[in-house]
Length: 204
Image 1 (cartoon, helix red, strand yellow):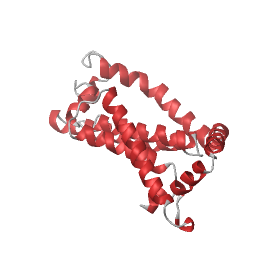
Image 2: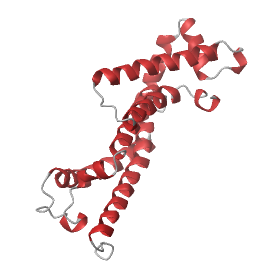
Image 3: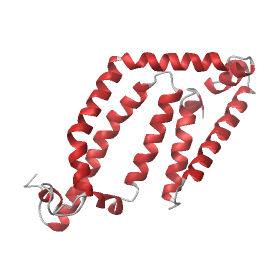
Image 4: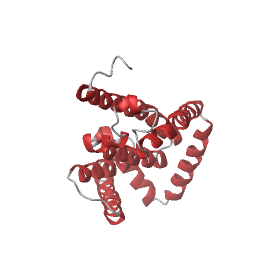
């Protein structure tokens, strides 16, 4: 797909993320061997598409095909050095600093109370009014694909950050989108608890 292959950083991040998500959806219990197998398969698949792209005429190649040509011409370490330099330079990018600062603020302000509520006895916690005594960790049972989806997105963001010239900007922008979606998912789930245990909207 030209829309994916046009940017080298897309396929290496997307394939393993969707592969893991598929295994989660099939109910496969993952361990480090299966995760390693997914990563090896990702390298094999992306490499295969890169070689196929390289076999096309030069003016029709995408980043994948041009990367193969660069490697064959001995420019692999130059590419790695350029990407490392570009990644480090993004650490001072205003967009990444704003995004990551905002995310850290959310995690520091909300993360600890949410973790305490999820792990502790909700009936004794100050969040009892919010979830009608249902532990926040119950969302994993009520919405079984919630956590697997988060794990898969994390994998895509981390790999995308490592292989893209945009570096930490990928992670920052990705989390800036992901965090509000997480909050919205929790909010909808809490409202579904409300419908089963009495009105909550008035309290909110």
